[in-house]
Length: 477
Image (cartoon, rainbow, N blue to C red):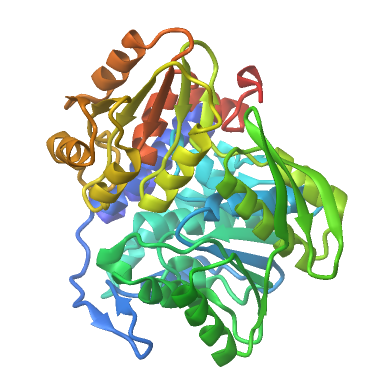
């Protein structure tokens, strides 16, 4: 498909179903991803941060082409290695509970593209999304004739949310950064009323650096000069980089409340918050499970207080916020838990949460993309009792999958015994389900793309779009 033909995807969109409209938007975004891009020589900027591709210049051009303005909107910018999506949704739900007209952007999606675009408590309507995509297609065709070239999948998806927020009259926009911070496209949606940093660990080392300090320096690039930033508790080296950047930019650094009394409750958790001024909130309920979600909830609560929200609205937002494939329990027997854990910290958090789930036997269905530290994942996972069904993520993953043989070798190295390898992801999943019985537990992990593919067993892309929510009513809480 030539760039000039991109906008033809959206002809007669008023005659199509909502699910078909979103399918066409995804075709368009995938077509953009497949278009040849200008070759850019990697370079390092003055802060010793690696710059890939055009940096922010291509997103800046797209914003200019679409005439998007942020001056009348309050921007909340969330970055980090782990927990940024959950934290962003907790903030967005709390703002929504307080009656603020809020839009939010997430990446990646796990089952339906619509999951990236959140407007006023639900997914963006297909007609609104289609109109935005049509405008972006026209801009992309024009940019393809310029030296800068057409926008990327991620840049276009972000622009779609911004256009939708503008059309829907949202005065607050919560943005989850895609990768890193300094050169993430979300950085151009500025200035932020508040910047938020969640936990920082080792991931995407090929782009962000291979030390915690390098990665933290990149992510701290979101900090707004003379702004406010709230940060999760960080390792010493990461904390030093965040503090340095905040000082250099005359930004005020805030810390979240302390967490106490953590209790696991089915699909969620209950905890207490202790704020620095001595205030304590007891029995706060969070709709997602895991000790790591307690830390995310604390950061979200601290952020929302800085945004002027009251306790009741924050409590409501923390309970209401749910993202798919975050230690998600699926209905039926055997119990299936879907999780997108794809780095060592996330896998450690998952394994800690599974300790609170009683099971006679555990069956793990695993798959990862090729740029991940699979040996670190294997070390967190491997045990002589559990059974492992190793496969590769589906072809929808943006990077090539890790071969099952490599992952299986790493698991054996760290003590796993019962391991089977599958090229077909669904055969791996069905094999695990057929062997597991009542009282057993099947866990899918290693990749959001793998977990999101298997989630279709319970809820289709069409149903998600139709319901306007990743959790249709029939799925319960």
